[in-house]
Length: 261
Image 1: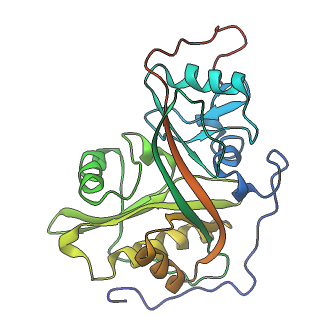
Image 2 (image 1 turned 90 degrees about the vertical axis):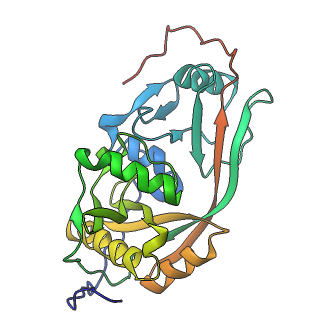
Image 3 (image 1 turned 30 degrees about the horizontal axis):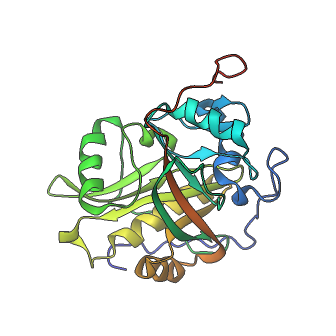
């Protein structure tokens, strides 16, 4: 790939993180829950059995595998009337009066045995870069990125003549793992390998702190999946992305027993 430094690292025996005791099964089976009860616990807003990120950080909600009417009422209270929430890995339909805003099959890929490399051209992005990031996201549509998403982890970008033309960064953070997300390149600069270089650079930083990279992609995005597999990611599981909207007239459940944490 053009511009990628020659120094490539392949750990002789990559460490595969053990399941978190706070999450049933493997942490990547419930990545939002594992994040919000683990490294991202400081973001967690809780109501009943539900956890979510603050609205300006991420739309992802951690919902029980077997949500009942009380769980959906708590979700409505968290989001508010007309509010939107996003779920990953859940196939349970919402209540009949909730709107499904998007629904798509997806894949989860893990990079436990991939080559990684830093990138000399990549720069760390910060809060001052958010307006430009949001403009790039609007042009490329890589997935949800909000005003405070950058607080979830390290984001790297490549600039050309001062303008941000490509980026990638860290989103969900289950114990021992970090999700690579917001991988995008301005249409005018595609075909130069910028996205691949940034994915390798973000993965390199993840590996440097003793964790493993993973990512999600829409099952229909075969070009991206093919790129990630070329970089060394391997399919771990299929999944489902679901966006839902609370009915506009949905009343909040009683505050007693609720609250955030």
